[in-house]
Length: 430
Ligand SMILES: *Cc1c(COP(=O)(O)O)cnc(C)c1O
Image 1 (cartoon, rainbow, N blue to C red):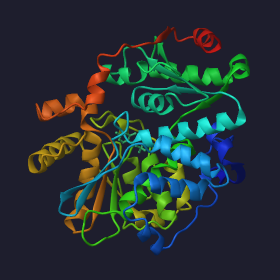
Image 2 (image 1 turned 30 degrees about the vertical axis):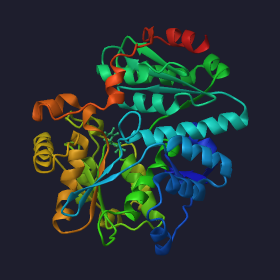
Image 3 (image 1 turned 135 degrees about the vertical axis):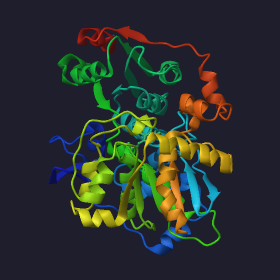
Image 4 (image 1 turned 180 degrees about the horizontal axis):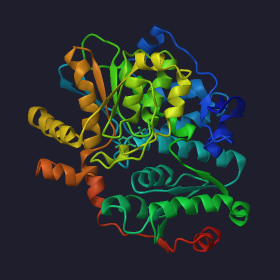
């Protein structure tokens, strides 16, 4: 796969370089120059195949120049180890559960695929790759689990001491092996600054080949197309119809992946960009003007983003034509009270428990489902990741999955550092 930069369409690089670099040298985001396009029969024939089979087909079609067939087999079987079930709630609405991975959130798909790809690259090129990532919680968990035991890859997770919830912290501090947690006596901003400083330090660069596992990495985006394709082809309904996808969004990587699948000819009706009170993209879709701002805090906090990092990719996919984008994507946003009400309503009506992010997606899917259009809501996290909100609304409803409960007893292993490059350097060079 050849890629260009959203800032310079004449720029070209290969997939492996794009994965290593994360961002293009001019600061733009990498986009595929070409995606294969398939006809209707092809999509029909995929019906009934497993998620992993679909992953192998689509990663094969897009990355055949970058990995050989055995490598693609290994990447898909390492990354796609769990399913994405479609749960019908009735009245044309289905929930696509993307939270069956090790950290109970959809980010597992992207992180695991990227890890498997880097392992293949490290193996073939005979060198170790070091991942540095700063986290305030969720990303660290997905990256740490995704890269855990990936051959040829070392991971350092930087996080602010005392500022990450207990269970979240356990998700990336109890693995050991190739996953190292750096407990920084400072803020999340300090963590980000330190990661940047490591990249700029010649001694560290001499000793290690550094990469980040940032969510804007193209390797995290590609595998996310697969579950859209899965849901578009398979349905619980008797008559198959192309779906409306309602996507709870923050940095809009998830939605961008859906729009890329659409470019390949995937059947769909339209997409709903569903957000909480951080609604710059719904505003853009409605008014045609983009006004990024500061983020505000909500109960769906993984979507508290004031200036979404993938918005440039969305613009790029539509050649910055607002009218064209608005035909495919409608925006909708909801307050915390509406989100809470949706969680309670769906529990009372269906005994189905949604996390706050999924609830935003559910609200976004209401209008189309009421018009009898097949509607698929992407469920981005398991409710047990947000126990405070759920327990307050519906005491006793939450069953903590065993793999999460087990974590509570595991021992945290971290290296404590002051927010100084010197401390971090000592760890990385030892
Ligand atoms: C990251 C995240 C989102 C937002 O996904 P984007 O790709 O950034 O739009 C939504 N829900 C959950 C639970 C998340 O962790």
